[in-house]
View (cartoon, rainbow, N blue to C red):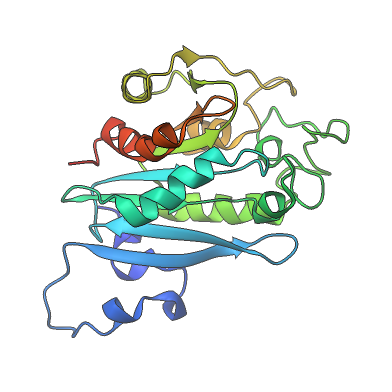
Length: 252
């Protein structure tokens, strides 16, 4: 069991501990289920990037649902918000939920952040390029954006076993090739085909969250891009949270 997943390790600082857990007497038995809300970081315009944890404080298997990276792709964020209120991981497992890592883009309804950077082209990999300013602008340099750096710090600290990064509108499960069994379970649960989602950047490792995590932290887990359709139904958006969890084997 990783030390970073202990009850105290679930907050980025002591001040972020939930009052209910902080008040548990030292001699009391460790709780088998906890809930947490932490601030992972802030956007360029100062909006909070928030993470929620549900599950065992020392979970042996943890899923992260990242609802949104591009501000004009709202469906995944709705899935994440539904999960916060409606789902609970099975005993011994854990679930991290981050509704959006691009709150400025969500507020503006733009793909990029407030500085015009595509956060899914800003990760520090061998395939990063600056590119031209526009929808896929990679930023002035690798990991130039506050949002990217906040997510990097979070992922390095907690090292989820499974990461699902939700997007629109390409309708499929990304073929990362690292954990094909997980890809197939996602495809079955969400009724989506496995597809290769290429990133037209430089040669080398894709400068995306999934590319970065699989390349540099793959010994800890696997990250998969999940693309919803352009206009998924409300039932699909809500039901996807449980499908993601079943695929990661953290749902009852």
